Length: 493
Image 1: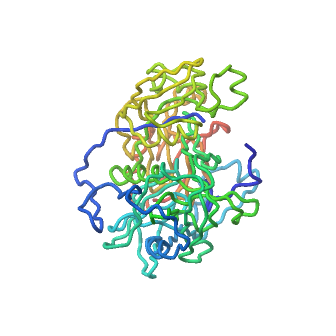
Image 2: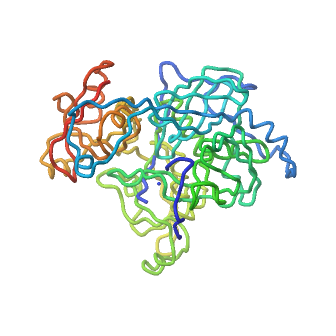
Image 3: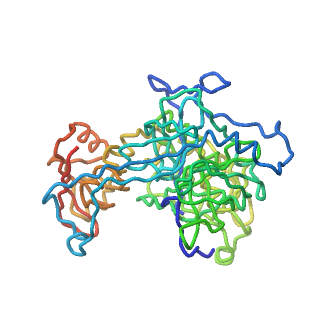
């Protein structure tokens, strides 16, 4: 596939496949959501397309009037601060004179109200690192929003305002969406509130490589976008893609354009992925993702010729996660197998496999059908979490200290030995939190100490950070793999 001249997201968004699922656990105070016509439940509402009209309207006014009140304008503010003096030596700043800005910054986008109790879905990049999130409703009322949780792997976020009896858009089954079907895109492009555009679904299962989430285990991004020619521009991020039954079929996320503005290609996260992410964030504050622990790529003519495959489409297995983290390998799946079906869902590409597994949690059993030298074999596979077991990943163990705006991970023993370290945790993703605002730290930094206290795991790192009080000076000591010397980064909580 040829790459577009350039990709622009209604903000910026990116296959070793490692996905997964878990068993539901109850919190002391479970989340309940009040819907307009239903009792309190913790799941989203779905429309039954089988019971709705099959007549495609030529007039979109009724649908626009119904869904527009449930699409909001979101403004995120990052109150950047002056960094500590003489805090650290940074090779990129000091060798290349990289400039940094330290004034308040703002970004804006859209969001979709998904229930009457004030829960709103948007893109992660719309609210990432924000100190203040303001939501303006279609009737011009404004509220401060709380960020419930985010998922960079799908570029989704869940926020909430303290209001009830709000209009909302129910979900529809995005699997039933068909290429050629009419859809409307609703959002706030270029701060033009409540803009509605119409088009069709141009394609499904698109992987456009804009969610770059590389980790030690591989790329964990889930890309299986719905492509539409409904006009989408910067500011539409997080807005609604709705079908002719006024149901939410996707969250508008990205555009592909040589100019940065609409050129006919828009991309939305399918509602079936969105609903799973939302339910996880409501219950746990972090997504519980099942992992197969395999490296996959879409079957093409080159793979067919090179490995003498008997099928022309599917997800080609090229390798497995190390150690005991591969649920697929344990079940009997082998290298050079081609995954052609998961449960009853046909798998025609790696992105289809990613999307399908991405709807499951650690502990879920799925039936994986592979084609091996022309013979189809089905294996029951119990999905694992990223740590190689079926337990729940707790927010503090997976995402580090939220206020810092970073995602941290444990460092494998081989890397520590090569760098002559005995401990440390790596910054996997650097958002616009306190660290980015106050220091020149960059992705990949291995934190070995917090105020001279050694940290050996993400759990220990979180415990140390939770002890810090507002205004307290914090010094992170560590190194980079590609620049092995000790650095110190200082900031105030």
